[in-house]
Image (cartoon, rainbow over all chains, first blue to last red; front, side):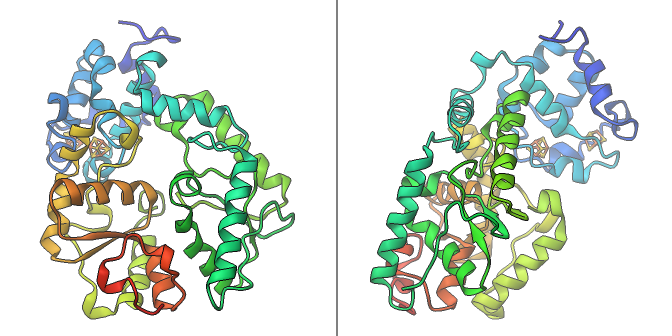
Length: 237
Length: 128
Ligand code: SF4
Ligand code: SF4
């Protein structure tokens, strides 16, 4: 079987992906990866089996097993592997072999939402909505919490040292959970800001194995940090 | 974080947690640090559309947490928080899942009433 956009077999691609000191030809079949992998046994697969199948050229199975979406790319297997074989890199590559419309809808949908808005939010939150929620929550804290009258949650403050990003779920589903972090930053006197653009911390295009989308989102976020002239990009994800 | 920054950052976070809750209230799970198990919420799994597999993946984590006997499990990342919270419900765990920022603000005496969603009744009014 040949993969979309490439004339190479999975094994040839894997050779290029894995440096010579981590090639899956080095696998000893020791099983350490599988014994410590929480995804072992799901979808009748485990990391050693996955590797052996790839090594034996069973590309059809490799490119279609839903197991690649059950492995969390946690890297524990690589940490344990005596040959340092980067199994999650192969799993990621196998994800790219799935036609986009067949990949998990939730992941691809979140990626698409993020691509469709300047905020890069997987929940599709728009810039003005984010600003509104932040200002609304802040006003309430200042009014109702003694000692927090001067709490700040700056948005688009040019030249701030830290650009803080934010998981999209909080402003949308549990906005009060944003407040403790603001208080800590305030307490230590941090010079920080949110941005209306590029503030979303998550990157579902990466999970979707959409390389172009992944890059677009990262570039969008970098542009937002640079536009405000911030020195440090604080990622809370 | 541990995945890209190694055990150094894991140890730094343990320092913070120990100072917040007190040495006698800190319980380590096993295995830990780089040898720890992923909770199963990462890599897109929470949106991956295989909830049964995701929970089976998380069983190891649920057992690890149960074995500590701890009543609070701290998750520094959002994905982990959602997954571990879900695991407690699914596997009838006796723990609550909290963000680190909640404990930091609680111990600094500046955690508001509305910011205590994940705390148990015994801490709902503490240091208000
Ligand atoms: S731990 Fe490494 S060497 Fe052992 S079976 Fe797994 S991939 Fe092969
Ligand atoms: S990266 Fe995937 S295969 Fe490796 S231990 Fe984690 S879940 Fe298992």
